[in-house]
Image (cartoon, rainbow, N blue to C red; front, top):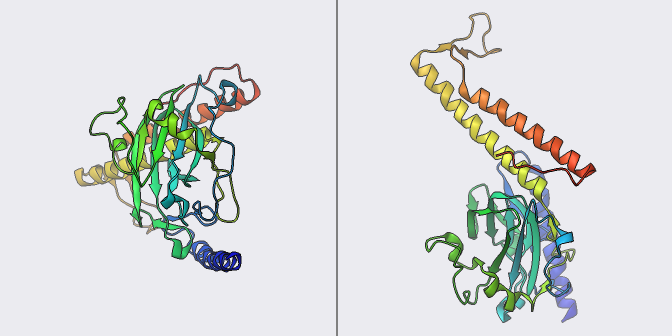
Length: 298
């Protein structure tokens, strides 16, 4: 039996290496979601970390950030799973939800995007390209408050005993296999789970960490993308209205035309850049002196 499992694992490694090479060749093309070396379910990497215990106040910054716990109750089906679904926060991959496991992330307050994708085992962790997903279990946004503690429960076998009273009846986090549950629902189940530690080569996990900087990088990048799209629409409108200076005849294609009216989006982009720089400076000061006040730039 052990030799069969070894051959099975080697076969997956080879397929994963081929897919990884393809991903490198396609660098710069559409976003490829790939959890190579991170996809393993409990059949390949049963959670063996510490039993659940709440983080103490000195392990995370309750005054500034929020804490999210993820867990998956044990099930016979989950214990036989080869590929576990992958948790993304703000479009960055962190945790594979293995059966009988738990993990945590310390996040920035504000609106966070949470996504759960299931990989395709035949190609070792391939989950999708851009908006196309092989199996999209959850993709939504939710608001977190400074000092807030949240519990995400994943189960394909049963639903929570009761809905989260803090959520509206039509909230997407009350539907499907991944739900935001209350402490009263989570605690009796999560205390029986084990921490989903990193288990190379099939279950490398990056849970159990502070991801505030990554959250803010996503926030600023997303805001910049939105403003640049708004700028393009604004320039197109000015062209249609005749407020646009065309290229000089001698310039050919080396220099573009320009609007004859001020572009509002340019000012918004400059303000965004100043907010980003101010936040980065404040974070640098906080790292030197943790008594300094942290602020939210939006």
